[in-house]
Length: 294
Image 1 (cartoon, rainbow, N blue to C red):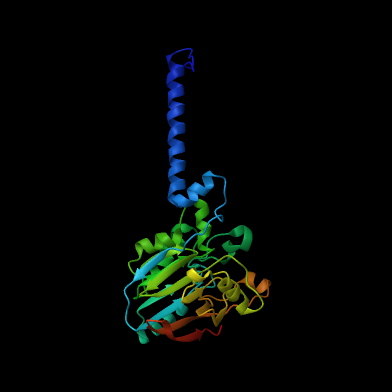
Image 2: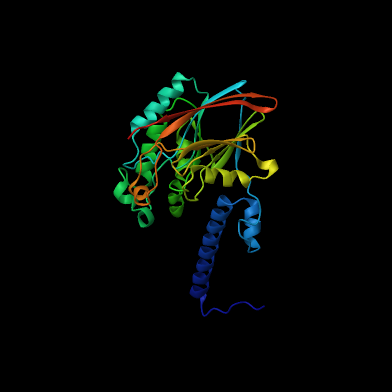
């Protein structure tokens, strides 16, 4: 293949600059891809496959076994920076966790409210506008929690991915007691006990149990957790199915105008959970639901 002819030196220099610019842009794009996807996902994308063509294992963190009794607070869907979030809810949750001597806390997604004006008209519901303002406010709130807290992101948090930001992960980076454990879902392993935290983007159902039952049915034998903690639907409930203790977490926020327009109930409150464990798994599972009457 012959070289490209140039009319003069200036044309050659200009072409070299364009080439270097294009190369730099391509490298930046590749960095963005490798930063967002695992090697397995990149391999699937390179073959033209979707990301649902192989099993994605939720991220997993392992923590030291605190003893035969495990005590923790579970809260979800705060929607901080919205008019539906109330600081008094979190203050009450913290008081309960202190009183009951929690060893840690778990959060089930939708820490922030996001800014999806197109789908939910969220801009009319916000007290803090923009990534920086919502991040700062959420950090102030999480800093009040004196316990190590494990968090997954929810669909409202993921609005910021459209501008290249991962707000829950960024918040956890700046809050010492907060630990990000996954996008939408994550696993916590304590000794031989596996706790799965799941947010999801599916809709609510008339029967509170239906969503939980369908998710449990989807687990294969080797992927079942001992405990399943769920956010997203703002519904409270406890079910024991396939030897899984499943908890739907309600919401640490009040009913939104969108939920009211869809005639969807909002169960405001939080859970405190105590488990006794032995070599066979979870021996006892005690759940306390604290509702907010608003």
